Image (tube, rainbow over all chains, first blue to last red):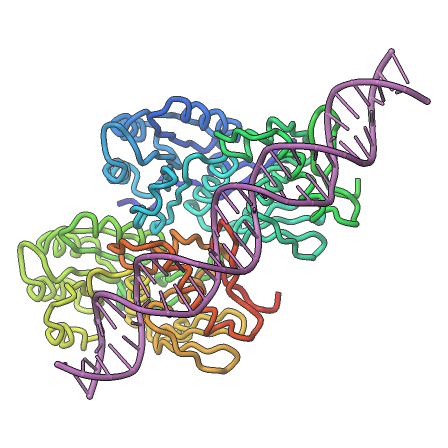
Length: 257
Length: 257
DNA sequence: TGCGTTTCTCAGGAAAATCACAGGTTGCCG
DNA sequence: CGGCAACCTGTGATTTTCCTGAGAAACGCA
């Protein structure tokens, strides 16, 4: 096997004018991701979200198609549903690996299947999320996988910084002005979403769509509630960083400005 | 390097951004490992895990293939199942040795295999693990073999340190703040895995995949249980180093922070 | 074989997180 | 300034996640 894999992604990053951090391949071309799921609604949802990340997406509805597409598309990462109509998830994995030995895979599994036997899936550096998932979660995991699969440089990529607020995606640690802040899982994901889009107004609908699972059926005011929680922990006493744009949404920005 | 011992690996190490220590060959190229087993699922699993260590992997399904591959791949270490379809383990070993006199070999044996026969073999600096194995165990043994086969410097590499907690991979000694701590085999492997990934959240699935045998079919809460055991021994009374990230996993970090 | 150790299952309970609900507050408009 | 819509947040019920004691089974060793 050739070591200098031509399709390897280095953890090169660039920051777009909007302040969004994007992953790019060494030659500056967009990252390529293959999405495999038999439910069209899922592939559509994922494709849209991942395209929004600036990535190039292809999708397949079964194992055969996945392998075929992988062969010519040569993705940098694969999102793979474990429940496919034509073949077992592990079989697909094996065939994918024959085409692309080093490609990282993000598995999608049913919630109750986790206990059964996901043996060894995360051992090779791969990862998984359970259905129903939130888009932020999928994107975050994918970014992690891609980052780690490339040249293992750039640790700073796992840390988001806005003003004196920092969020470490590896250790899940958040601090403002040096002081550690404990966040719950949902608070963490919400803050991550805000911080990945600094100085940009995010509507409640957008937030709901990205941070909460796609099957969330609750009241829209959970967003208000969690923004409230975050403020208590992030802005408590200090100059506020989380701002409300009445009728539009919320945004985060450095305190001093 | 070309003249003296072209395939020799010095125990040169480098520390990746994540804090993981990697083995490298003197010229900076990745370590090469040949995996030999007739069960495809085993070679796949091992290849995945070892590749994740940053090593270059080739695999073979029988003795003939192993010798052939070894000839041109010239690995720095070999993982060799003693039960191969075409020839006896000892025969394979002999032929391998003719190709690569100094390469260290990690034997895979069935649990009930005659142990004394293996014991004789490992006298030459080789090592073995019994099936079913845990990936952490295989990786650790391989690292040891490779480290020892190279220039015999850097034994300090076998000691992991996080804060005032130290773990010696060679002697299996663990101590915190000078005080010796006795751990069982499983506790030791779990702690080693945590300490090899300090300040990094490790999910229960990840831990299960690396620390427990690949055929473990039990409840995922063994991880919780062993974390509990470790805390009793490591953190007892002291400032805790093992932390729970609810809904995400566990991580270890120095107490003072 | 027998005994101490280790591994693991099971289950109860504690703690934490999530979210609905509802009343209070704020900003905006005429 | 009044009224309305949008937003904020206290309270508590429900659910999820985690911790740990007790004991059974497997193991290791003499």
